[in-house]
Length: 425
Image 1 (cartoon, rainbow, N blue to C red):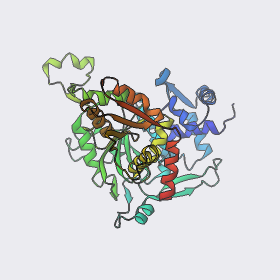
Image 2 (cartoon, rainbow, N blue to C red; image 1 turned 45 degrees about the vertical axis):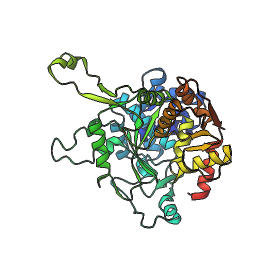
Image 3 (spheres, helix red, strand yellow; image 1 turned 135 degrees about the vertical axis):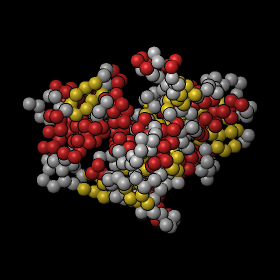
Image 4 (cartoon, rainbow, N blue to C red; image 1 turned 120 degrees about the vertical axis):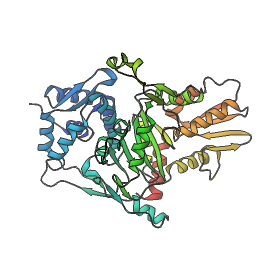
């Protein structure tokens, strides 16, 4: 019987709170590729976890032996309720992988994902009666520390005392919605949101793009959003951005497709995939139409983040109030000497400057559209690792003076430090 160490329990714990997690996502834990690969193989060989798929789609879920290991390791944190919830999260492995990867990234970014690290639903957050700096600080400074007595696991965990900074899986949320008739939840069960993340600025519906220009049924997505604004999920405080969306994908393939489809004017109304057994009857019935995701038709603002360490670092910024204007200010100050410019657009010496490092899809689409139709010289400012996205978006544009200015890799860490100093969270 092998000896299990911290890395094995880290893997098992992440699977317990997220359901299914893909192989690349485990890299977010900070362990080396070799160490992770060997540890995952050990857990598979001992039947603690099971494996699905191959290559980049390879993903894992807990087995009974893994649940028993966690229960022995910490019976309070990994209670029978948590294990029953885990079984629901890991059903339908292909879809569970999408939800699990999103949850795993947000967990590694410091958000409350495990049920012990956040409030149960419906979650109450005190309303913001006095929107001054001190009240916002008190509202966001909502973390307490906890340990579990008499457990082999002596780690110190962070617990959120309000819904701010917490992530809730869509399966848990959908179970809360009442059903007085068969039409009440029209389309909600087919809404493609992986879950919901509350931050000081936005109530974000979170999606996995499947690395394509996502297709969805707008009725179900709108109904899901509208139900979120009721009292079944969140009570008390609501952030200003209640129509916001956060989209994840592997790299920038999906982000490029989403923006280019919209800019090229391709009709977003498309027929959805139907099963072969249903295709035979397609001529006898109306084929349901879907809609391709664009930067604005699913929600505003819409953000995109890659499922990697860079996306994780950016996601951590969302926990701070006003993180996007502050990011813009710092870039304008450092790159151009402009002291106070919170917006993404500025004109300097007849050159149009677009600061797009926040990966706000609405701003990116508007900037590329203006650059392609106006003769002015332009500069796009992004982070170093974001350059491939903007190079691809700018490739079809010819006859323009366009620069791509890259901020250094350390910029996000520096911005996070300044935000933390200001808000003292």
